[in-house]
Length: 175
Image 1 (spheres, helix red, strand yellow):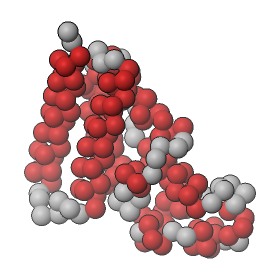
Image 2 (image 1 turned 90 degrees about the horizontal axis):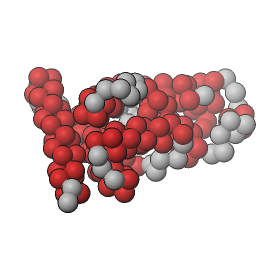
Image 3 (image 1 turned 90 degrees about the vertical axis):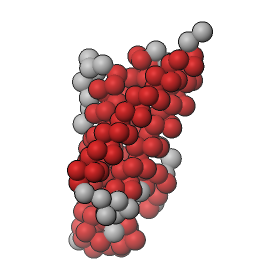
């Protein structure tokens, strides 16, 4: 059901995804969907999770900057692959195990960089929102006037900003 819903949104946009439209594509009645999801919000949470699960896991043995960059690149690719669904990542609270997986990987990298637990959780929220915002803006067409080379350069600069934010947070917590 999630793959059918994702395909529907990829083809026709988020507004086209109704329980009726998903059921029609699957050749079932809308009521049959409720055996798998509680409601449309549950289905939307599943779509968010499916996008996040597309982001490849970085090697846990890589240095923290490489892991953060890998997660950011994977997020950007997922946004470009699913521009109609991707804005949901900025609109819906993390509610599924897949959502938590992504957050946990970033927080682990930040703690391994040397940040205390509370600081790593806060910085994860800030960095994730920054990366999600760039990716959603690119996928949504906000940067359509820019060349692919400029977008790649902008994204590389954003990764430098991420590293700088981590280093700045480390400096602020070091006595």
